[in-house]
Length: 80
Figure 1: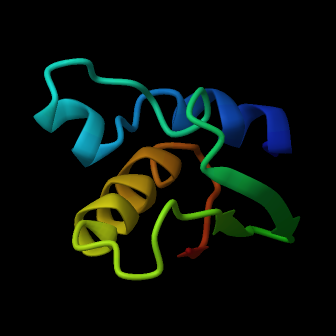
Figure 2: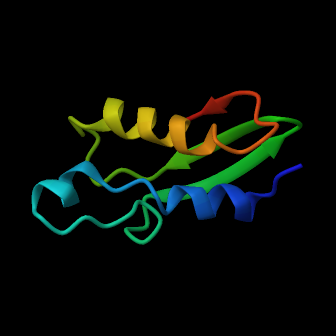
């Protein structure tokens, strides 16, 4: 099985799209964008703290989170 720490470690591979655009890619954990991670059985919920409610990159960001966390063996669904 996997833990919250396993999920958090994978989220370090997800860079904030706006940080990438500035030429300084910073992962979403280091930026403080991950508010909470919870696990229920095989399902993972990653709650984000966005810098703006009008974030234009949220679709890309949540897709990248799903891909990263989906790499963990045994993960069912990933909600963001």
